[in-house]
Amino acid sequence: MAGHFRALKPFGTQTFPDKPQFSGFMKPCRFEGEVQNLEVQGNIPDCIDGTFYRVMPDPQLPPFIDNDPWFNGDGNVSAFRIQSSKVHFKQRYVRTEKFLREREAQRALLGKYRNKFTDAVAFKVRTTANTNVFYFNGKLLACKEDAPPYAMNPRTLETIGLEDFDGQLPCLTFTAHPKVDPKTGEFVCFGYEAKGDGTPDVCYYSFSPDGKLLETVWLVAPVVAMIHDFAVTENYVIFPLIPQTCDIERMKAGGEHWQWNSNIPFYLGVLPRHGANSSDVKWFRAPNSFPGHTSNAYEDSEGRIVFDLPVSDKNVFFWWPDADGNAPDPHTIRADLVRFIIEPKSDNLDLGKGKIILNQDCEFPRVDDRISMSEREHCFFNFMDPSLGTEFEAIGPVMGGGYAPYNAIAHLNVKTGSLEKYFPGTKHMVQECVFVPRNEYAKEGDGFVIFLVNNYGMMSSELHLVDTNNFEKAVAVVLLPIRLRAGLHGNWVHGQDLALIDN
Image 1 (cartoon, rainbow, N blue to C red):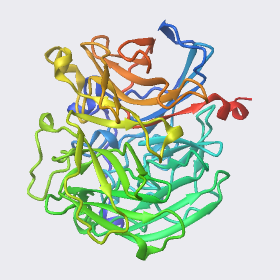
Image 2: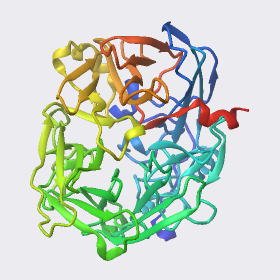
Image 3: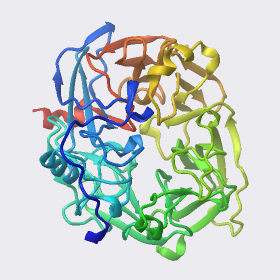
């Protein structure tokens, strides 16, 4: 394998590439530290008590790969502790093997995104742990779907180490989007390319609330494709395969891990959640398209699976084109919110295009996690509406690139179709939101959405809090003294769950 490794660049002035994904607001942040008592405009309700965790790809050193994609950076975790109407901020890098070895070498050692054959040195675990951060069983898990997660202390953000769940992790990979059953506390997970790069194996597994392995089922996918997110109902798990496919020989030749394939369907694997084996999976098919992040899934009174998610007819990851180098213009990419009705016991595996339930550009849907896996009424998501008044010409030169911008947060009542929008300003874009219930007894969707906002006029970041009962106006805007580049995912952890750690 040593013959595949690249020679290191000599020491000298190190600057980030003059590329959109490293410029303007997307210039790496590289901050570690804490700031107490952030400035607050407005008033944070006393009932909000917990921590908003999020992670961003944030390279500590310039890459040696030309045109490195923006989400190949090191995982840098932010924590916003909200209590007694005050906000304290803390941020630390995940101490992955990559991060520590590159810090020691003072230069980049990792090569192309998920291609070990382009690395400068051999890694045992080459993950950047930069895609999601999730709380489970007293630990904060920094996840990226190519490896096990790294565990962190939720209070200090110190890295504990690679998490193998006391030696129980059944495969080599771990999803960036695990789910918790709100009724049972079961931790539902999976890994794809579960036996290593380029393998078609998918491993479904789950843990009890105290971390004991419950279920393990090995599957073989119809194609080696990306499975970024998945959905869970009371009795089923659903695996949407994105038509970005992997070929190990292409990787060995120095090519990309992923390549768009417009000649295959959008597959949805459906597996019974309990007591299943590999022969129980069914691979349903929809027309070639790009499935986004799952909104929610549940079983209706007839036993059918109702599955909502954004779907685009274009390759959203345009920086990984097809075999002929074709990729869509980023400005033409959009996703509708689509509903698929799946009859899990049917032998007819063709689903069709699904039903569009919101014909407007949206992504990163979030629901009230207390009713996840069952029928729900409220959905919150990132939204792009050019008619709102965003000054695109003014902010375009400083936005940077490599990600899809959204200028509003939307609240959709799935049952009535009513849509509300929160627009933070003409020189602002939003990042993914989280929902926080007003209290443990609040009805579904009654509470607050919390999210980061990019203020391009000030080239700074803000944390906005919006009451779902008055959605068009923020109850509080929290000002950060630093700029946080675009993140990927995050989650809210209630103060009562952190109480033992905080003490």
